[in-house]
Length: 223
Image (cartoon, rainbow, N blue to C red; front, side, top):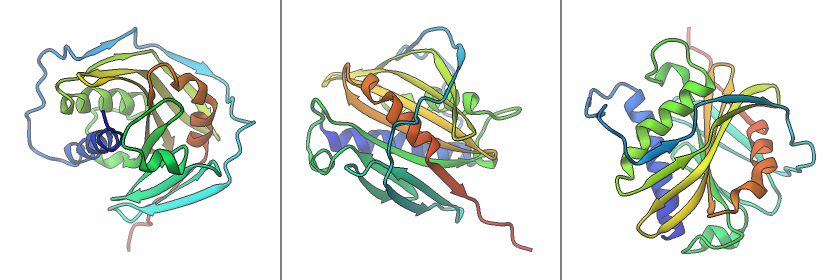
């Protein structure tokens, strides 16, 4: 499984979620069985912020299709790029150019999901957005199986956030997955990371710190 393919798959998944939520009339969202997802109980556990020892020295910003500016502070040794209103991240320049995801490497991406564009009935929250993302986008990877842990809520610099970790397996192998949604004044930032199997836990504090280092300046309505 190449690193570039993993990045492409996860970004396509996130961007496809946005397109579906923005009103695509394609009702091909099959409510039939979803055997490629296995989850533990969908519990949400409140936790404290454990990010005080993580230093985020670099900044990157990107403008989305709505004209909003998504900004992120990230570690000094990491590599970041803009992509179609999203931001891609890796934990080193070498990781960014690597063909394969190997031990010690971490890759991820994030983008904004404005609340008006999310096709969720009733009141939206970080939990409902993350759950909907998982349910609606794993269908892109039809040959993959996912084992996901419980949702866990936490505070990200005063914003409500939720994280879910797990694994994804396809014929090429298994990787660790971490997905985070941060609620910024009713706008939702979706953050996804991939690491070699068994290695995501060591990045937990950094990922939570990143969630607290995201900002979104939504354009003011005209008139």
